[in-house]
Length: 114
Image (cartoon, helix red, strand yellow):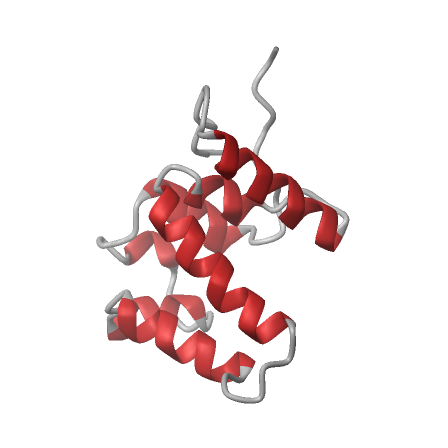
């Protein structure tokens, strides 16, 4: 299975955010490790998640999901694959790691040794 290798030495604040996120849900969060490759994205997603997690009445979970789909310009065929209406392998815009996540969304990335 394909996965992104964690960055060797992310900035201290990225490591802190990863630790806090894992602590909050009591498990490793694969998405945060992927986002750690682009710290600005990690921070942005963390702020949006924080609004929803803390039950901000201004932003619902559904609104957050819709913003993500729009912001990432998810195509019709990508939506169909996410809904299980199309085989993700037939969607050329998905990277190998995206296809792996769609096939098994609960899988945790492998730990790197040492």
